[in-house]
Figure 1 (cartoon, rainbow, N blue to C red):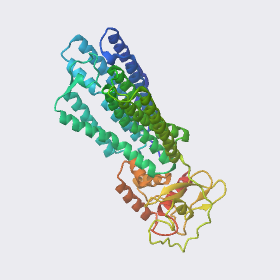
Figure 2: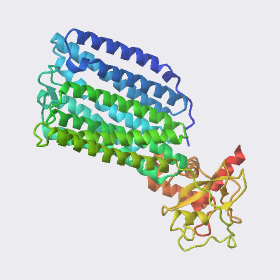
Figure 3: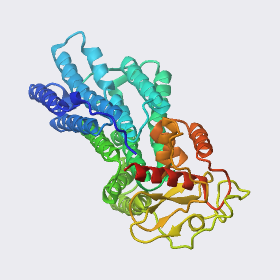
Figure 4: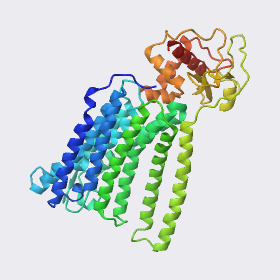
Length: 499
């Protein structure tokens, strides 16, 4: 289910403005670098990567605006602006240091903290692309506030002793931190904030079904890019010591990694916002995320093994790194393949005998769960019947206990849910607007967590809405079919009648 609001015309020309501004920053950094100023901050690779990422985020903002995802479009615009700010602050910092200006210190401190906002915004953009509610989620507020505080604390407490003098940010000896415990506490809170949205979205994706599951999975993979970037930054610190890797090279690599994460998240946001996801595209996103995590693990372990103080010889190091690559890489390839298949699996359509309602009484002592609901296949066999070509296809809808049961989708062929006599109202006109949104998400295959993730409400609120929906639709507990399945069928039948 996607939002249906008007596009934002102001965002349609954003890529051009972003491209021109980013190009000007790259040219300015190149000029400063040619004059012998700036160190790694003026390296063409890092500057170009940030410029490309800013333009990609602007393009995503424009596409999200055209598709009606206003909140995601605004956040993607913020992502583009934050990347441009990073470039602009680099120009300002290098120029003020070169001129010996009194504002050089604050400029460098601001530049040194400008990498944090893009991490927050790339997560928020991907998460907003699958939201249908108009209220800002509490998780979004938490991520924004904590990472905003981390940016401010980092800028105020951390100063460069010799900015741009051959010692970039990953070299600890080039920076000193005041009130170190405060900085450490804010850093831990920031890391926790970056993990909140990936955990929430992965949980919602794995508990949902079919199209909803795929869309939430793509958004979850996009938000995972932010903590992976932080892990990459930590690995660069390890590479600096004990790995003895050139710090300038590591810092440029971090800029490229940050830019890549922003491009990846922007592309995933556009994909998730489309409402339908191709299995090949979902597989590419999930595999890319998993293999990136595997590569970081191999690089980190390899750096420690190959450190100058290691007792292993070159041959032993090569064998250990090769074995790690095969084991970790192979495991990541197989695991992400299964995960992608799970996210994109089409609902099955088993042939079973039709169910005969028992006098309209839908009674089992277990409430909503159908008889033999211990397994998904058993649950399906109790609520579906075969039909000929052109009939409604089955959609998976989890019941309250997590068992998978199926409701029909508007198109396809295979199975449909029978309607017990007297249990299916002719319309859903008695539902509130929010209840209609909940019921529509349920009919798409979303679990309670998936509905909560899309509508920006708590799972407890979803439970309350579902109880109200069941009452208004006259769906009493018990019987040969699950109330969630019957409610989904009512909504889909109502949608077909409206067309």
